[in-house]
Structures are given as structure tokens and as C-alpha cells.
Length: 129
Image 1 (spheres, rainbow, N blue to C red):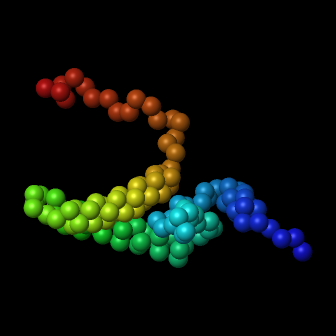
Image 2 (image 1 turned 135 degrees about the vertical axis):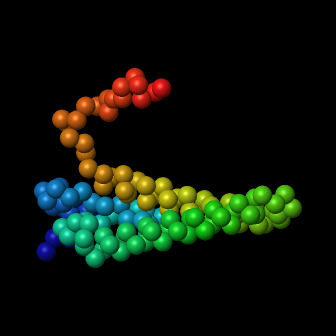
Image 3 (image 1 turned 90 degrees about the vertical axis):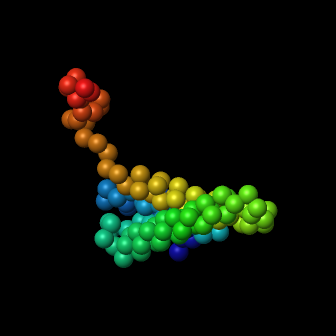
């Protein structure tokens, strides 16, 4: 029996996913400071993919709430240093979560077809008044 390392297992799963045409999905959480990926042949409808979608929504909702609270603390010039520091720490955590969500969602945007023009749509001069 061969002992496989975690790297070996990851490479084998990446090869299987590539063969199926599904890249691993960046998950909205980390474990021991390391990013987590989901490899599944269930695609976006798998149980874990839906759980990740729900977690992303929760993280973004928390970020919106923290931002609202931060506005109150930061708009008061008499806010204690400890409150401002706590607010900055929470904002930093929420920004990290939001950036991970953005990266994960960006990775899942399909590549554009080569048939579309790269310059994008054009407007006639009349559209600019």
C-alpha cells in the first residue's frame, strides 16, 4: 500500500477535475490560515457548493452590518481608541472575507467566446448628445 501525501492527493483531484472540465472552487473560509478548495463533480448544485454559496451570502451580510456600525463609530470624533481599533479589526476581517468571495466568484465566471469583439459595444455619436 502506497502512502500518498496531501500534495499527491490534491494533484490527483486537480487532474480529475480538469478531465471533467471543472476547476476546483475557492471556498469562503480557511483552515489554519490556508485557503480551502472544493473539488466536486456535482458542480454548482452540489450540497457543498450550495453551502459555500450560503456562507458567502452570510459573510457579505455581516460585512454590510459591520460597515454600518463602523460609520457610527468613525463619525464620532469622541469614539475611544479601543472602539476605533476594534472597528478596524472587524472591518479588516470583513474585507478579507469579501475579497475571498470576489476571487471565488471571479474564478467561476466563464471565459468569453473568441467570437465577440474585444472592444465591446459601440455607440453612435448621437448617443453622446
